[in-house]
Amino acid sequence: MNNKNRRFPTKAMLIVRAAVGGYLLYLSYGLYKDRAISTMSTAAMAAIIVIFVICGAGLLVHTGYLFMKGMYEGGPADVSVDDKTSDVEDGPGRDADPEADTGKQDFTPTLDDKILSTEGAEDAEFHEVEE
Image 1 (cartoon, helix red, strand yellow):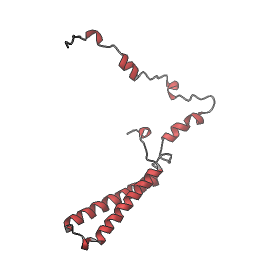
Image 2 (image 1 turned 90 degrees about the vertical axis):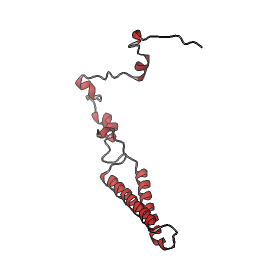
Image 3 (image 1 turned 180 degrees about the vertical axis):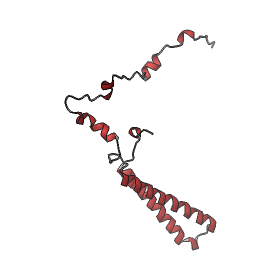
Image 4 (image 1 turned 180 degrees about the horizontal axis):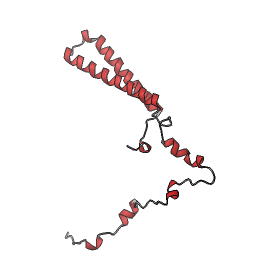
């Protein structure tokens, strides 16, 4: 995957993920602590506790990894920040358009070109519909 097309979560979303992970761990602790007074079977209770612990710990570890590596919007690993400031850093005498240096142009048809295209229309057969 191209890193320039990658979207990173915001810092606020990382905080929400960490809170959800912590809450899942809190719920699993509460279920474990109250397991004696529960009417649920022991196997079902154990399965739910294990699932909550795995998901909560996984969320916390993954969120910590993303935060420490700077993989959030505006963080050190976000290369889209470099794209926004590249026009300012080019300075006078430099071309801000990288395609202008190589002579390449983008000939990708736009949506309007595709809709208005009559390519293949001369071979089409039209039939009247009776009402």
